[in-house]
Image (cartoon, rainbow, N blue to C red; front, side, top):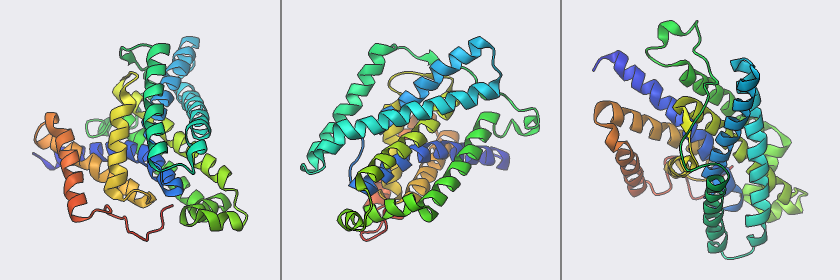
Amino acid sequence: MSFEYFFELFLGGLSRGSIYALIALGYTMVYGIIELINFAHGEIYMIGAFTALIIAGILTFLGLNHFAVFVISILAAVIWASAYGFTIEKIAYKPLRKAPRLSPLISAIGMSIFLQNYVLIAQTDKYLPFPSVIPEFEFWEPYSHIIGSVELVILVLTAVIMTALTFLIKFTKIGKAMRATAQDRTMAMLLGVSVNKIISFTFILGSFLAAVGGVLVASQMGQINFGIGFMAGIKAFTSAVLGGIGSIPGAVLGAIVLGLTESFATGYISSDYQDVFAFALLILILIFRPSGLLGRATTQKV
């Protein structure tokens, strides 16, 4: 139980938490804007991974190098997944905005099941190997026993995306419109904010983040199937609730806490109980702080 082993688990937990954060942000942004739990969000993550698999397979066959395959695959995944997110909002959620809150929730569950079965029929029920689109970096070889190149890319890319998202939300016109819509949708409309466009943009942005997460996890795990979105979605939703759903910093904090908990539980106790510790932590925090770590009844949601 050396310090090096502890540090290895810590970095592994950060890497895992970073992926959860990318997906959890989609949940929390959508909830912040329209107070809907989008249960189909995990399937967007899965569709992003499958899109990258197809594109990466074609480009690898054509002989492109790892960097080109990675960049083009991730771009294709975010574009395709964003299109799905936009379409789902228009078909499954927009017609139900004035319906009782249970109706869009059921619609979200139905859309999740539909997307799972759609990919099952269009692809296969078996696990498919995902090509190695992130190579082992030579300059990182002395440290590769602590954290691999794939995990390094996950940490760096997630940090860049989080910084860009923070800038977008705090300092851009569309970010201010998102915050205004989250605080008071009617007042935002009276002030000239196009609420429909903001809601669509939020779904696109959340799908973008989920697709990036899907490609990174697929690169790390080396295989995917139609069901990977379910558990990833549950963990990301847990992260959002843990941090205080509706709060962007809360979603990131909750994801990091969840990732570290799973990593240390796996390393020091047993990998068989990582999910038990993750959900036990959620229960404990919700008992003593029902609104989550950073959630407040009157908090700014987005």
